[in-house]
Length: 113
Image (cartoon, rainbow, N blue to C red; front, side, top):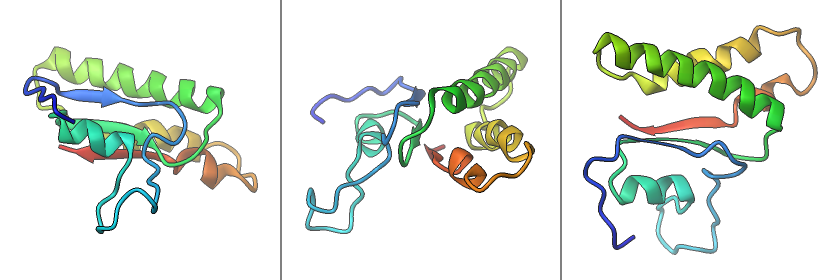
């Protein structure tokens, strides 16, 4: 937390539970997790997950996320990463409904700009 990275734009933490807090770590109302730590050191945007995800789901979401982000960068437009993540998870939501479909995509979260 002592580092400051003023030019850091995006951290993608597609591993399991990178946005999961631990209520025993803080007496305040703050969320304490790896994603929040990345924001604290200067990243403008952070993508994380709130619980365990399958490798296949992470691959599918990140494939769409990185492709759409690259298109935004090439076009010179402003990065709209929350919308990009939304579009990436929307593909999973359109698959045939099963009892655990909601849990497959809702774990992915975006913090920051």
